[in-house]
Every structure is written in structure tokens, then in C-alpha cells.
Length: 555
Image 1: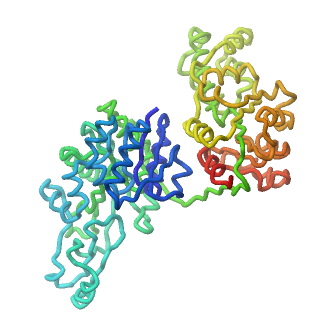
Image 2: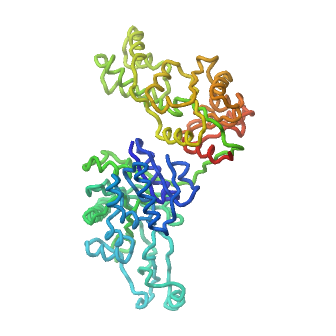
Image 3: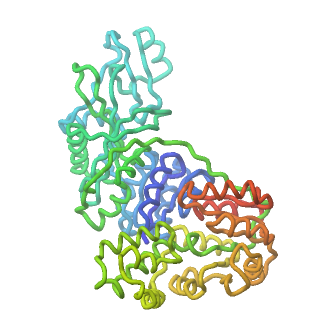
């Protein structure tokens, strides 16, 4: 498991970066910010509150201590706010075994100053924006001023006449801006890319920003333009040669008038706020950067789809619990255990043990994935034989072989370890309550050390009936030795885990929907037909959100 620290990651910019990291799988995300509560806290595996950036020494010490304590391997900035501090710590972090995804200090100083960036582009023979002296301009067209240290569309100034200039320059310092002619008709293109540890350049993701709001692109479309791609690639290679490292975002302006040539308007030495567009094209830039430490020559995906990405606000609603629970009861499959991955591992092993001489490997794998994805789990062997055109006389021996297969490492979701650890640190008791055949479930738990270290494990088939039968919940309550109203249930099935827990007297239930919208019909029916559970069952996208709802409750 790779540990990745995201700095200044609590806000909107950190949200896209952390989502990309979570999509990578196989890593633990640590996010630090100065605010105790923010959206990313409910998404990242671990959240840390750090000192204010204004105290650079304290902040640097905090980053180094966190890196040492948590065995961080990569440090990625979410915003431009702490880039200089990170750049100054590159050597110290490397001594601790961590790689910082940030440029060298000289290049960073250049890129964080738009006037210096323009000079750097010109020296590199890359198309740079024009620069106009506002005192000598004839104001036949308005001037646009961009803050030298600004980003996006924030803090822009527009001056239409000499008289307006003289009045505005009383309130602002003109030297704090770079000035150019205001272009009324143009197209803006944005590129997202990463530069790896050894200077390799990732695939370039070029998009057209069709709609922006507050400086953020909210609607983007993929662009395949050889000229633009070549220009952005030249920029990326030039950055790499200047010790540029990490994720980057850059913009090119293409004026409608042929009298003005296209130019690079911005070069941002950190991930773009809308870089999640790259994920839809199959390019995970933070993951690419991390992988570059192990595989300097990374391949470009053979096919990248043209997509339109639309960024929408979404709400996460959590209950305000009346009191902090004394314990948590977890369902096993699809809550803690990635059951589909476990089944696929079983089917791969079954092919080696039973089907290698009976079926083509690719056909077998495609069929296995289809059946697992269609939830045909109870009749997996029968349907496999049927779809592969094999005789049913093979059934008994195949089932015996399937049952005998042991998966050496039970696949758990990435948020399981940090959630169980946090519950332990908060002295909450933990139980597992599972319905599936006890022999199978015991095997899963035996091959997952984290799941063996719980206070109670209940196999419902051994104690009077599967969920939502109250007997199963009653046994878990008894084994935890706590009143039912001091316990909550966490599962993936609204009726079995949710309504069943509430009928059994538990305080609350959380239904984890790792695939958004996967069971809206169940929620609809539950709200309408199981009135006793109304307001006492909540949906969450991950275990992290559930954890904070519990820990934020009053003791």
C-alpha cells in the first residue's frame, strides 16, 4: 500500500486530486489542511489539521513529521499556496523516503510570476502573451490586467480609457499586473499533464473549456488537434528539461482574428482544478506521476475516448447522531470485502485447477466477469458450464474444486484499514455480522488479518436466521455486551442491513453506496414502505463519511 500526502487539500482543488488518487486504488490518501472541517475530510482515508501557512517553519516541521510518522512516499500539492515550502523541502523529504511532486525552486519562482513566465516562454521560443505598457497604450481597445501572482480568472482588471486608468491606478498597483489587449473573440484550450520523476512526460490531455464559473471550468470537451498537442508537448518537454516535476496545467489562447497568433497564456505548476476530465479519457495524472517512480517508460493507452465532462455540485448529507455510538456492526461482503474481486480471484484459480484443458482462457475470463457483474453468484458454476457449452456432468467435481480453493489474501476496500483503526483509537467496539455460508466467510476472515482483530464475529446462519431476522442482530448485540441503542449498523443492503437493524433496536444504520445511484429503487421503496426506518437509515459513499458522522456526534 502506497501512502500519499496531499497538502492544502481540503478545498475544491484538493477534491479533484483526491478523487484521482482514490480511483488509482492500492494507496492510502492522507490530506492536510488548516481547516478542521471541509468536503475532502469525508473522502480521504486520513485527514490531518496542520498549522497555518503563514508560519512557514511550523508548517514545514509538520510536513516532515507527518511524512516520517505515516511513512509517506509521495507528497502532492493541491494548490499554489504551499508550493514554495514544498520546493524548499524536496531534499529533506527525499531523505525521509518521500518524493515531492513539485518543481525546483528556480523554476517555481518563474512560474509563479506571470511576467517572469512570459520572459521564460520567449527564451524557450514558445509563443508568449504580449505585454503592453498601460501608460503608453492609446486605448483604441481596452486593456486586460492579470495579477502577476494570480491564477484562473480571479482578480482581473479591465481598463477602457486613459481616464479610467488614472483613476484605477489610485486603488491598484499597475506593476502587480501584466497588461495585454482585451480579446473579445477567442477560444481557450487547457492542457493537463504530468512530468515524472526522471523527466518523462505523460500523455497530454487537451480540452476546450466551453463554460466557466468563478474561474473554474465546469464544462469541458476533449480536443484532438495535432498543432495544439505539439505545442503543449513542447511546453511539457521544456518544463521537464528545467527540472519541472509533478502535475501541471496550462492554457493556450487562440484568437479569432488571424492578426493575433495563438499563445500560451498560463503555466500552472500544480494540478488543474478540472483535471478530473483526464480521468474520463483514461489518464490518471497523479497515479501516472506515482508510477513513474517505478516505471520511467509508461505507455499511452491505445484508445482515449473523446468526452465532455460536466462538473456538478453534489451534496453529501450525514445524520447528526444524538450521541456517539459505543460500537459498530459491519456487514462483510461489499461493505468491508470487495466481493467481486474475491469472486474473480476464485474463478481465476478455478480455471487453473479445472478449466485450463476445457476452455479458452480469454473466453473463460470474459464469461466469469459477466456472471460476477450480473450477480449470478449463487449459480456461478452452473452458469459457467452452460455458457461455455460444457456438460453438466462436470458440475459436482467443479463445485468441489471451487469450494476447496483458498484465496490467500482477501481483498478489502481501501477505506477499511483507516476506518477500523480510527474506531479502535476512539475505543468503539467492532463486530462483523454476515449472512453468507459460514465456511466461506470464515475463510475470508482468516485471510484478512484486519478482520480477525474485531470484538465479535457473527454468522447469521448459525444463530437463527439471516438478516433482517432480529435474531442475527440480537446475537451481535449480546456478543458486544452493549445496549442495542448504543450500536449502529453499516452494510450495503437497505432492507437487510438498514431496516433490519432498526427493527432490532439499533440506533442508526448506514448503507454504503460505493457505486452512486446503484440502489435508488431500494431507497425509494424503503422510504415509502418501511416507515419505522424513516430518518434512521442513511446512505453514504464510503466508510470515511460514516466514520466522521459517528465521531462527530456528542460523546
